[in-house]
Image (tube, rainbow, N blue to C red; front, side):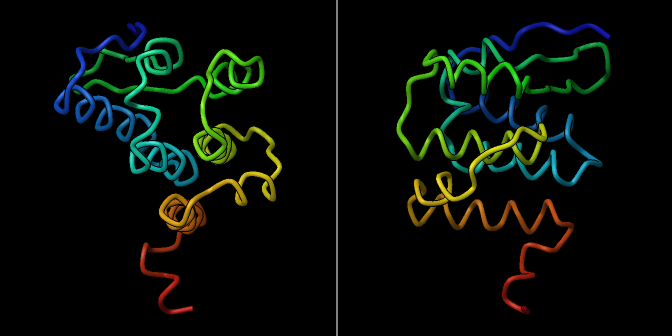
Length: 140
């Protein structure tokens, strides 16, 4: 497998390609895919070069590139203060890392840090991680 740090030019298409590669890298694993899609949908972390360059690697040895996040390293950097961010941004990263990387988090602290939009995106991600369709909440 040929991997290298994700260093992409800034711009919509570069972020879209990265999002596609991350989604493909998580395909088949509902909880991992839900966490990755939470990061994509919130539009926070994939816009940050410090996050992308340090914690995402791309496998180009296959026909369609696959990308992966080093969740443990990202949370370690967050805890060490090397990824300055707001409380909501911190919560999104922790929740995504919990879903995708199995990294423990204080759910009470994380959920109370989210605004209405990111809380709704998190609820959708939780449903996806549990294998429910996105509309599952409407029928419950």
